[in-house]
Length: 182
Image 1 (tube, helix red, strand yellow):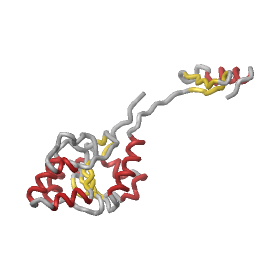
Image 2: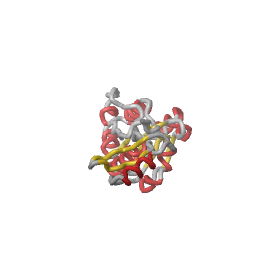
Image 3: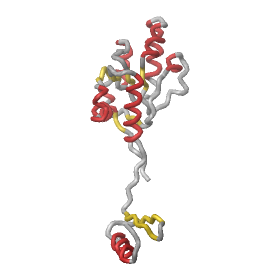
Image 4: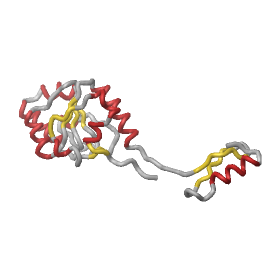
């Protein structure tokens, strides 16, 4: 079984299934192809913005919604920038800002400098998480490919598998001739 391959931020932004999110790149263009999403879960960095960084997971998109921006507004501007910068530097593939919010210019400059794409959508946070998670679950899911024929032998489902061209279909046809079902 092969595991789903990580996808680049460019692929994520251009994905037709996510077109309704109208994802727009704000900064970090040089990371579009090098930054990879390897975890389908979206993470809200609430505690990370409060200074507790150990549970910021690599490979996950960090999403900044209304509550994160409301918290940052309670801080001095320099402290808010420092906290957001700390999250951006935690080996994350991208920052996704919802409801049309734009991070401070200093954070966008840092995203450009270290190659972490910063993306914006006008959609609600919950809708963005739901749509992005559904797409990523499918895109990053394990995949396997089998060559086979499924037959019903004495009321038991039987999968005949093997390399292409070794006679699986012929075996299934012979079983059908003997009264079993395809």
